[in-house]
Length: 279
Image (cartoon, rainbow, N blue to C red; front, side):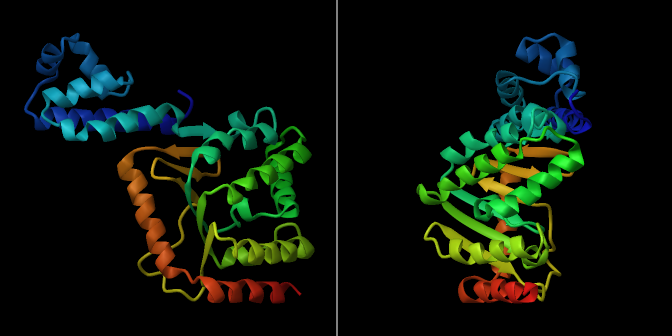
């Protein structure tokens, strides 16, 4: 297995299918007979040793009277193998290739939603800010030094801001205050943020540090691409979520953050205050 997370995801899917079978009042042997399978196939799927195909899941839910769950279960199964990619595997040949790997997704997405608690999102980053971030990653993970090429790929990717997509970005106020690249780089970055926030394609919300977080506190950074995929950046890996139910949870969380955030003049005031704090 490529990671313990993938193994656990397979087991969780198998456990869910087992619950569906039991709720239908079927033994593993009975389900296998209905499906025309060897009896051991049900056991292998339920224990996460075999990944079910789309047809397997359709057959399973059909005979268990749970066809309404088919789409979610198929999305879960399809996402398991690609859901968890370790950074060291993605960045094996350097940061440029890792930056390029997401280009197809960005080019086909029309609605982008992003939440960030620590850093400003990629589409609004300046070259100096990008260089500081990627240089830190290179040094921390002992990667090939291809920073110039990697920075250029990320800068070029920002063309999507002008190609018809809509970007809703929510950041914590603290992201404005974290000194990335030193005072000069950070001041330039915040000035650029004021400019980009005025684009018709960009909606920028900032959650003030004084906001009441009783109901909704900061979580991991995430991106929602249309309504088909969520990407989450972890310390050790890159997580891809495609199950509709989970995407819905992130969408609801984003909506909650948007209500906490300030926009327009109030957001610009927070950015200006952060610039003044640097100066």
